[in-house]
Structure formats: C-alpha cells, structure tokens
Image (cartoon, rainbow, N blue to C red; front, side, top):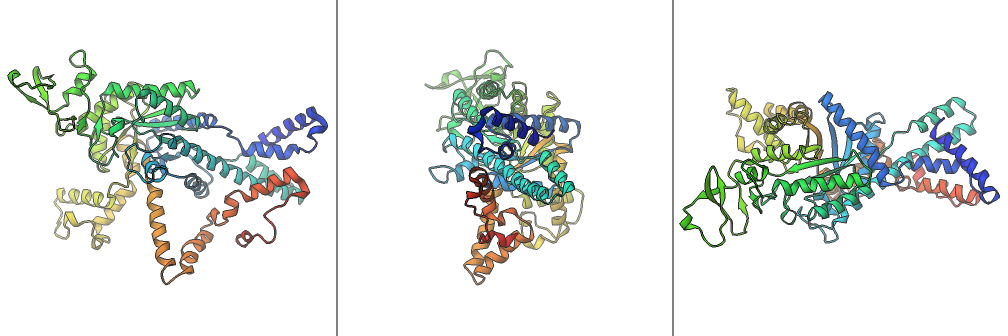
Length: 532
C-alpha cells in the first residue's frame, strides 16, 4: 500500500477515535498534506541526504565517471529553480546533483551590514538561516508538484478514468523529491573550536549533511582566490574537524560528511609556530616549512623566536604584521600534508583551493595524497575567479608549442581577444573546458565539482541585458521578448508566478478548511489562466 493510502487509513482511524469533534476533518485531505510534507525538520533532511552522499562516494570509488556536481546558491528561490529545472531536463532525476552554499555569496548578498568581502565578517547565523531557507523552498517545490498531481487525480476519478487514475496514483507514490544534499561553507569556523561546534550544530539542525571547513585563521580569513591568506597549524585545524564531527554525532547524523579545505597553495603566511615535542612530528613538519635565516646567537634580538631546522638554530622571518612567512614554492607540499593529515583525522573529503584549473597540477597533489590515503577524493571549486577562456587557451597554446606546431598566428598574452574565438586553438580549448569535469574526475580524483558563484553572475548578466533593452528602444518588448516569451517557449514554471508562490496550494487548503465557503484565487478572473 502506498504512503498516501496508508495515511488515509491512519487518519480515518484517528477521526473515529476522536469522534464527533473531528467531523470537519477530511482524512484524504490531511493525508495529502502529510505526503506533501515528507521532510518535517532539518535533521530528517540531513539524515536522508547524508545517505545519498555516502552512496555517491562509494559509487565514485567503484567508477570515477560517476562524479557529482553542484551550483552555488544565495537564495531559496534560486536553489528551488535549479532543482525544478534539473527534474524537468533530466527525466525527473536528481542523481548526483547537489546544491552548494557559498560563504562568499552569504557575505556579499545576505549580510545585514550590506555587501561584504569574503572575510567572515557576516553574521554567523546567516549561513544556517540560508540552509533552512533553501530547504523550505525545496520542500515547497515538492508540495507544489504533488498538489498538481492530486488535482489531476481528482479529475481522473471524477471522470471515471480508472487507467489514468492508476497512472497518477503511481506518480504520487513514486514522487521524486527536490531535496538533495547541500555542501555548506562554514568558512574557517567563525572562531575557536567551540564556536565551530556551535555553528556546525545550527547548520546541521537546518538540514546540512555536509560541512566544508578551511584551514585559515578565523580572524584573518580571506577569499581563497585573494592574497594575504594565513593558515593555522594542523592541530588547530584538526580540533575544528573533531568539533564538527561531535556536532554531527550529538544530533544523530552518524554519517555526516566533512570536507577539509586547504588554502595552503596560495597562503604564504602563518600566525603561529606549531607546538612540537619531537623531531618529525606534525608540529615539526609544519614549522619546517617556515622561511628562516641562519643567525649567530650573538645577533639574537629581544623578542626573537628561534627554530631548529636541519639541525641548526634559525630565526623565522617575521613580518611587520607579526606574521611568519613560508618558504617559497612550498605550497604544493603543504597542501599534500594538509590533505593527508585531515583525512587521517576525521575528514571525509578534501578541497584544494588552486589558482588555476589545471588537471596536471591538481592530479599531482591528489596522487601524492593517495600514496598514503588510497581512496582520497577531492571537492573542487570550478571558480568564476578563474578566467577559464584565457587559462585553457594558454594551456592549449603551450601544448601546441611543445609539440612543435607553428604558433605564428597566436600571441599567448592576447588569447582572450575576440578575434581568436573562431580559431582552432579556441575550439580545442573550449572542448577541454567542456570535458574538464569528466577528465579531472578520472585523472585527478575529483568526486565533486561545484561552481561557487554562478547565480551571482547570471543575475548580473540577465539584469544588465534586461535593463539595456527595457530602458532603451525596445521598452516593454525588451521584457516580453527577452524574458516572458522565453519562459513560455521553454516551459519555465515560474512564468505562472502566482502558482510558484503557493497560490494554488493555498486554494487547496482553503477548500480543506472551509469547504464550499472557501474564497479561492484561481477563478475565471485570475490572469494566470492566460498561461494555461
């Protein structure tokens, strides 16, 4: 028996139990509301989505063509539209397709202070609030879709069409939810390990099954693609990984996922000298990357710190900011050590923030990690901070030049020029961009590909295009031809924006609550009927 029919039977029994006082309750209507609200709290969502993500990780280990993807969100409507679109275009299937919650977008789009840089200055709770908002909109997408199914079911039953009734009932029973995993950015933890634990709890209670944390200093945090990044010693970072795991366990999400992000590739600074007890321990390895100078003990100044490196006492090079710098060209080695250490101490996935999308560079680091942790898997930021066109044209240029081809038609530094767009080099570069995710999943251990800020950029581009047309010569045609007509042609559900906002579901509820006395919005004069 389906959940829907089971709920009808259960609610009929409840009506009988409570007798005359419940005579105004329709068991079928209440059962529909239950089915439409399958996930009634964030922890139920976190448990459901953690199972999905764990299964996807196992599937990727068995077949690395089964990588996963997500797009960043800054509003619940954006996340809802992504999943509605995915279900529409991929045969009602959301397999291996997630949502990403970017701390950058929260800072830039959701802070009460106004637009902020990605430096953890936004309100801590805004991250958990956005997770809850995303899942509220996704749950509404479920309810709206099922509401339409129930209306179709009523029509089929009223027409006495048994075959159609069975088909619609099967659609209801096999409904594919819009609820998918969210990978949520907790930045550098918003403080010490206790602060990280408290923030992680809020995020999990809102529905997060996967939390991403980075190894920067909380109060010095920078965007991963900007300069001035400062990392912490490994033990400080591991304490935050453990804090997140404790939060998952406390809330009963025993298989929650932790992504440990290292910013060491672009981070040339540290604020602390690591604690070390013996040569070769983790603290000693961290300190071994610090750039030092050999000095005579007679030259030691008041306040100097000394380290023992390579059997000698040396002085770390301290900057005016009281920060210490790492040795040049040590970033990749530090990334490898960060990843190994994190995976050996509770992290499930790693994230290496890079300065360019280059499979050979990423693959070399992951290969080194896999020598110690064979099933290491990477989450990778397909960042809009990269100039993808220029990067890949330059990679193709370099490969052609190495192969001895005639490059006289190209100037490497000018490859972004529109005049190159139809060249064979540009065509080859675009093909490499198209296959980058599949190629890097196969060759560089990337399990999950995300774009952090896609809707930030698409909103800006579409708004620019609309403003140019609407305030220009095209006036209202700019909106009609560029937006509404395209929504109709492409069957974009939100062309019926009243329906998307829940108007039809509201009518259903009015019918349940008030029967024939219900004042409904969907009458003959509703202009949304023009889009039927």
